[in-house]
Length: 97
Image (cartoon, rainbow, N blue to C red; front, top):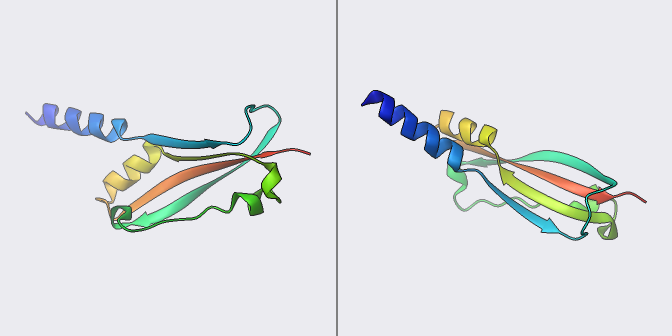
């Protein structure tokens, strides 16, 4: 019974990953990227985080893609802290001039 519970817990933890992408350019070639982490507490209930991609890329015309994802690493950290802390990873892709 214990093995079944642990197996189910591992499957749930690993299947909860999600990615949101906003494409502004159709190509990924020649893009610079900057990665970061947003920090949420108590499961992220009623919390938001704004990423200023125009500032990161030094101009709105240079923003190519913004990706926010909840990775396996983020899920494990959330699980280990019992939902008190939930990080969320993001990547901003900028066009090179």
